[in-house]
Amino acid sequence: MTSSASLSEQVLVMMRRSIFQTLRQPALIIPPILFPLILVAINVGGLDAATNLPGFPADSYLDFAIAIPFMQGALFASINAGTSLARDVETGFLRRLALTPMQRAALLVGNLGGVMTVALFSSLIYLAAGFIAGLSVKAGVAGVLIIVLLGLLIALGFAAIGAFVGLRSGSGEAVQSLFPVFFVFLFLSSVNLPRDLIEQDWFRTVATYNPVSYLVEGVRSLIIFGWDGQALALGFGFALALTAVGISLAVHALRTRLVRT
Amino acid sequence: MTERQNGIEVQGLVREFKKGPRAVDGIELVVAPGEIYGFLGPNGAGKSTTVLMLTTLLPPTAGTALVGGHDILREGPAVRASIGAALQEAALDPLLTGRDHMRVQTTLQGLARAERRARGDELLERVGLADAADRKVGGYSGGMKRRLDLALALVHRPRILFLDEPTTGLDPASRSDMWQEVARLAREDGVTVFLTTQYLEEADFLADHIGIIDHGKIVAAGTPESLKAEIGRPTLEVVPADRDRRDAVAEVLTRFGPPVAAPPDTAAVRLDHGTEDLSAVVRALDAEDIALETFQLHAPTLDDVFLARTGRKLEEQGEERAAEAPAEAVA
Image (cartoon, rainbow over all chains, first blue to last red; front, side, top):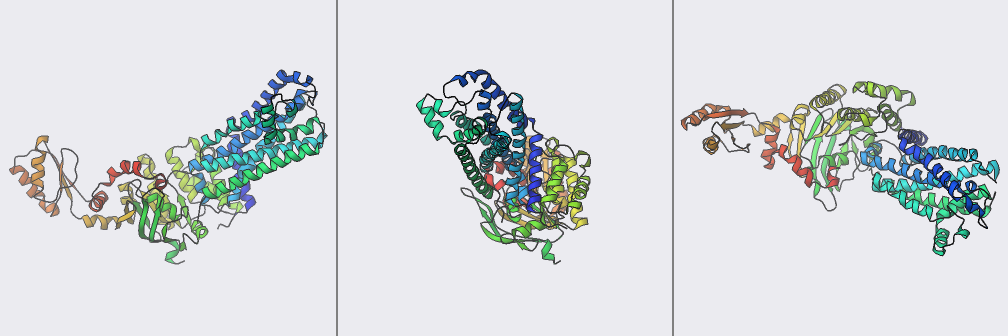
């Protein structure tokens, strides 16, 4: 005898599936952890002299740069979420799910929940590696928790955008093509230098209008300034806006893709 | 339970796609409870589009259907609760194991928590995948994927099963295994099976009733025996020892019935008087001093039925129509 599974049961089984999918593809778990850390190590080694610039806000370039892995991890989260859903479209697995009493929300929440679990794991590794290398967080233990929270919210926003593209296009290649686009946004932000130290006017202007700058600065503020209300408000505000837009688009795409009478 | 609750009734079902022909053009059919209905036709004929509509995954442009006594348009959830479906491609996640698939399916189908593992194991055992249950599906053969697909469709004990070309691409042994399982489901478990296929022998072997679809319309329907009986007369194929005398053979044969399509170097007719004509044909060929290489009598087949209704042979249609069909129509 069957009855409807509760939404929480449906979400959990889809989340478990998402985590298994990631764990069974080393290419989806090793690069998101390793590459950002390697990039930070290179930057710290090569750009440490930047801390001597008048007005540079940190004594250690590591403290300044540790926000970068969180952003790159978010980009990988978007690729993981998007390729997984695109594969469900490509293989017809989505139709199998459509034939069950599964609620649409379970697919999206389960997918994003699984991706967030991996993102949480990655965040803890970034921080652990940072602390081993001498990272200090001005905002203390509570600040570390807020860094993780903001990092996850940013990852959720990007993952939702990835989910939208995956569902809309049904193509893993289309999702992969997001990566260079996101990377351009990342490098045209204040990720490598504070905005007021960027000499080129056009670059500084682009970085000022680029929402990614405020996501980076939100994370960074807790590390090098302590509790900066404005930076946190802008960071959380843009992260929430990105998440709201991404989830709205993904829900709409899922509704279109998962048609049943 | 009334008979209607296990059957399928389709009335005037139509599906049009943008920039495409009518993939399904006003079909009518009835599938009785517990029978296997073979929906036979070439690629792009409208079989899969029909299945998508009957399984509630594609709204029809017009017409209606009752599946398990429920309207496909107004009672989608009730339809889905009463059916299982294995669609055209085995819809599996290559990164999950067979057992993972069972866990997802038993949970989403709402089986009681205590029953999930046992039901999954039972079905994996039944389709011969118990030993491969913990392997990733990406490494399964085509036959194994099809069997897992079938097992997943049975998780919630559906009364009606839709199988969309379940043996396409399978080797003969896997095909035979699938036929046995489908037949067992209908005969022993009383499951109503709606099976689409482009294989004549599959429909002939499995189906109690057959609908032949072409260009979105049902061109013939009935039991395999009744359809073949409509054709009635057998076909005679003759290959002369001297291939240059093929036309002379054809001229002789046309005295005994209308010519039918035949391979190169072969002349063929549908005999007006069946096997009674055979000795007369042999005498007539002998009188013309024609030596023979092959002299074969064929009982009517479903391909003859298709040929009689459409003017084309079914087995030649597959590849041609696959290229013509709109993507959605064969989705």
